[in-house]
Image (cartoon, rainbow, N blue to C red):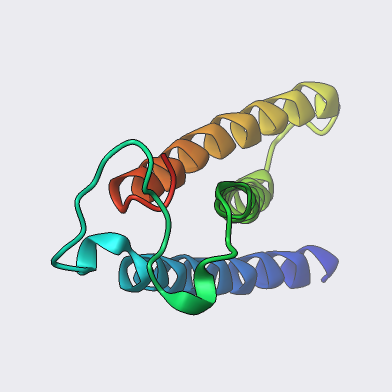
Length: 124
């Protein structure tokens, strides 16, 4: 019973994380300086041209990328960790495998998010 609830919660939270990912991708695209026709990209002028986002620094964008990568990698790892294993005595090996999967997923998602921010000229 507990594992069914945990699995259902993991799937629902993954759906929420994917919805957050899509919404944040649309938001980043909307506030990108590349949408301004007069914008000339160079090494010193990254950041949003929207007036109320002028105070958002590169550190904030990196923090946002870290949070999204953490959420997605954690949710996917939780879903993968609930697969049935015939031998319950190998919990340490399974734990180390799940940590490895989480780290690999986190790195992949973080690189994807940061590269998207770089493409949109919000960070340089």
